[in-house]
Amino acid sequence: MLQAAAAGLAAPLLGGCAPRERKQLRFWAMGREGEVAAELVEGFERENPGLRVKVETLPWTSAHEKLLTAFAGDATPDLAQMGNTWLPEMQALGALEPLAPWLAQPDAPPAEDYFPGIWATNAPEGARVGLPWYVDTRLLFVRHDLLQRAGIAQPPRDWAQWREALARLRRAGMATPLLLPTNEFEPLLALALQQDGELLRDGGRYGHFTGPGFQRALGFYLERFARAEAPGLSNNQIANVWQEFGRGSFAFYISGPWNIGEFKRRLGAELAQAWSTAELPGPQGPGASIAGGASLVMFRRSRLKPECWALMRYLSRPEVQQRFYALTGDLPSRRSSWTLARAGEPPLRQDRHAAAFYRQLERARAAPAVPEWERIVQEMQLAAARGAHAVDPARGGEAAVAATARQLGAELDRRVDAILEKRRWMLAQRGGAA
Image (cartoon, rainbow, N blue to C red; front, side, top):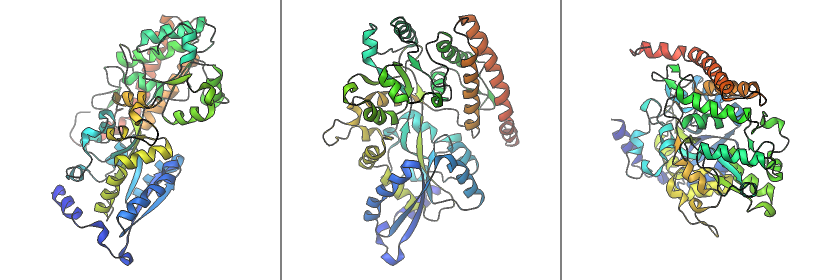
């Protein structure tokens, strides 16, 4: 029924309205993306003279609260940019329009053109409510020249090679060859997603941080601090990450795509060939990483759903996504966008610095799709930071690391089980076993 309604509503030509009947779409976007969206929609408005798009830019720091407040006050926009980890919460509230009927239309972007792990983040509880707009993941930024001086021919591809590379760099005189900021949850989460087990068990009802998968990831993470290969510092304690990378203070840094542009600008021509990106090593070979980014969503209360869908399709065009990347550095969500020729440059999939991101995105893995995930992942980061400071390089043997990991895992399970108490109650009310 919804599919038939969507098809019927989409049938009229959007550009057929007279100027005085011009409809207005309200589009909320965050940060730099909001500034760029206002420029991108100019092309959409030219194609659809009966429509005007009002882009309202929200700061990321207050966007989540503003979205919840708007829903409670019946003041949501027509469509919005939304971090894909926020989708489960907004979907649980019933705020978002299911997209299955719209995606069934012949001119909809095909599902197979999206990275599977990213695509999975947009369907919490099996209901597809988001269309990936741009994507994010984490991998290694590498100083190849420093590796070669230490006798390391290629970036590591698995944990064993990574351990060996870090040990060689230490023997070559580098104090802390890996920057692993203790205020970032993404590196540990990526290591955890490389494991076979789940981070939450029983359908997202309980934590599973004492399970063998997370314990293996946390042990590897803590081992880097126990062996003094990573400083126990947050990003805030490092005056200038880019400058330190250029100085050779570390050879590996786990980070995201925005740093491609930052390192190009800040390191200059003299180091242009000295660094690049590499896939994140996994236990047995190139490993998984996080499936991040932001999606486009349509709100149920919008009275302009066909027009919303038309804008979502426009912003999803490969050539529009490529322009979006040129303006922001945000990676395109559609595979076909990566193969388009670029003026004077190779396609993004062949770019020296971006190609590893394409390969990493093929192995991106979605985090648990529960509304409470934002709180859970912050608890995970805080526990990992405590662990990084607890392991003592002077006494940091395998047994000490394993004991610390077990203690932190048990504490995480207790905290996460408390966070998920309401979820268990709600699932029980629906008839599921708690």
